[in-house]
Image (spheres, rainbow over the protein chains, first blue to last red):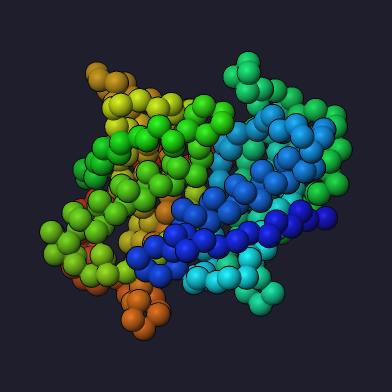
Length: 135
Length: 150
């Protein structure tokens, strides 16, 4: 199962080359990941998910995104669940084009204690529902 | 070979709700360093076309330590890992030089770049002058963005 985030493109996401800037794709991934974490990993809609930090990221840019009014779909799913970290994969796409593929390593993090923490049993259960082996 | 050095200022709003510089912002710092190297420095050495169009084909980055806002800029060192026929790879370290050879490394990254003809909307080959400039920054055994996590 994949989590799907509808991502709007803003006018100022485009750079002087007339396409969405490479850095902005990482923002789209972040919006999708945060949406997934807050809607699925958090105990309730009103409580922020705390927390995880990004340890590693890769993004393959496959096609440029010109300005558009229709949102993009950013799909997120889980490719590994470890003891204190998990890995996700992403696709940025619309109905006809795959614009980018990406991966992320996320470390479960206790923000107040400022230290890594174990992935909780409740989180593991959710993450495993979104598990799809990496291709 | 020397690395290209860019001092990148931090902005207070680069920090997110966790109180550290957000992961996305590191890519912006890399972009500032890359633009300084390819669009400002390289044209002065004769590689003028790079500023006309280079697109990012891939990024890989590993985050090693959190950065917090401070008035002093952070140092981004950029070098060339590989020069191919129609693409080249950059390496980067985001770091503080603590003196006496001591360094605090915040991130290590790689980017695959493709020279691009924007008018024709297609990739083009690396020109001879570009290759000369890029090869003056070559470093084959620079650090790679690792992926170790439990």
